[in-house]
Length: 487
Image 1 (cartoon, rainbow, N blue to C red):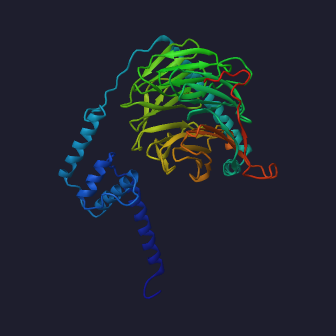
Image 2 (cartoon, rainbow, N blue to C red):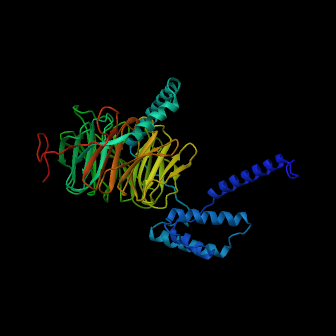
Image 3 (cartoon, rainbow, N blue to C red):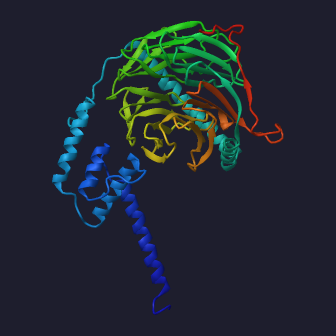
């Protein structure tokens, strides 16, 4: 007995308070709050709370409102019904502005697809199951052969030791697209004047330059099966003229895909390499046969422009996201919408799927990057990634243990997908970073931005270079053999 009290009772009371606090924190995270910032401010004003605090962002203001609502429920104070009326009216006004009527339940409708689409879906169903089985077997075998902690430590060590090795003056205008081949030997970039350029991934020497579009390019992607020196499709480009084009590594146009009613945003190859997906400001995404140039699918669903798209590694489903701040998960084998990714308060500009087959990263104008686990069907963590909009998000291509984000704050960052810690901040660009790519095991990173440069980051091997901050710069001549520079 201490001061007439039983120490066991004191410990039990402390444990009880801790459990109650954790339970309250859990309930607080589940409290729904308005999405629009004006509605959040209205509630705070009615509750005699500060409308905004110094340095407070929109997401932080929503969290403060969530705490206020949870505290009111904890104290037994209910929200008056009349306070909900302005909120409903404001949401209705916002929806009319965005051409969305949320008062009506969403209408699900199906359209008849062509025979080629049916055959394609059947092939995807068979092949995706085979690939998923093979992937799981490889993961199981690797789990028995290697230590998971040591593999994770290798990824994190590589990410922490990345230093700038090459910096190339890539184009005359801001670089807005960057893509890395599966072998890591070729990098593709595109700019706003419609030019696309291929680079050697080892030393950033220019390989081929060609005028891809008459209007500005919006994205570029290297074909999944491309190998340097092998004939076949090399890369695809998207443009604000509403078309996408397929190219070989000599700058020859192999195909042109026309059909969108507005400018394109992003493009992506299906993992098998036989189909190309495009997203557009006409609020649709489309699927094209690479060889025949036939449009197989026109998919609606978003209330605003569709901006980002990514395929799962097995080819069984994809994620589309747009300026409506919502991500949609689509089963490619059936064409059905299977899940909705919510949580962003501003447009989503980037999306990617990890090699584990179930982790999705979405990033956008709210300065955050959200990691979603489709097995749990929820967001597992929100990374406070940057101080400005996040323009790109890419998983490393082997296990997905490291995530690369690029931002308009002039930096690119590497994150651990297990501890959610920032492993490295890559600072070298003199302007906004618009695109990036990361190789297997996070051993190689490329970044490009508005300073018109392409930068190569690699692991600093101790003893191989006398100075870790040493960089090498290659300046391409105005005209080189095999290249046709656009003046």
